[in-house]
Length: 304
Image 1 (tube, rainbow, N blue to C red):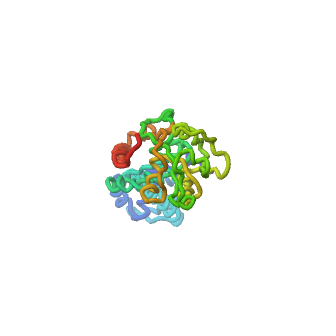
Image 2 (cartoon, rainbow, N blue to C red; image 1 turned 60 degrees about the horizontal axis):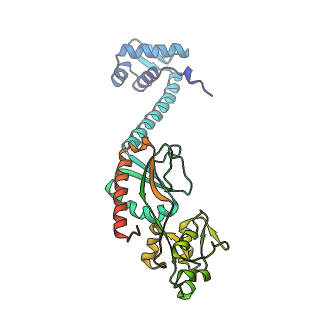
Image 3 (cartoon, helix red, strand yellow; image 1 turned 180 degrees about the vertical axis):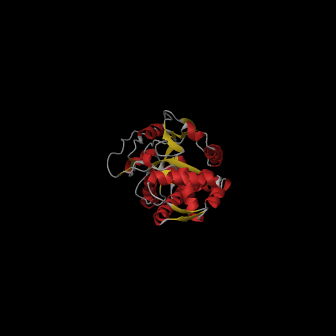
């Protein structure tokens, strides 16, 4: 590995490259805002350090040597790469980027269909929406905002509760050739879809006043979106969250069963690091998200 401590001084390299390009200390001096004498001095010091002659001097005229020409080509390429990298950083600094992470079901069924509104309001912001079932380290993963479904205990984060959610059963209108259960007790003869995230049927059974065992056989599905898809396909009855089921209910792919709802033990939270909260794009997204949730709750017959 090259020892960068042995790198010649950058001002001397820049002065040499300019002099090589113009074949003139005077014109090089104009470009780098030095005197011709200072350019000559820096080139001479570089020659002494390298132990070679970079320019043949003929009075006030100079001619680059063959070795000098090869060295100048290499230096020019390196300085160009540095200049391009610096310009790219400036462009990134001017462009606002916003990285958002959310639970797959919430990202796909609630946030993504609405996110175009924020983008229309902030066309200078590049939005990257990621979905993950895992709680991520927002700082380590370089994520600005995490929308989490949990208890709100996220150490070291700026945390704000966004909204609660509610459970109720849904089914395809075509389930069992349209012979849907008429009472909660009728669920005993139905296929109840199960999630692999500890979202049990028992709290809803208790609220509905029925004594049924927790489903323990059949397919167990990890993602809430997949559970809804299975219910839409007529494979069984799903216990779903209100916020993520409205698309299918509005389209008629699913129908809500009964009037009993149960408050979820978890809620949706806005979370970000204190450093991220200082970013204008994060503040703008936070304000937009709160307004969008308020509008959603007002228009969607929110159970709470």
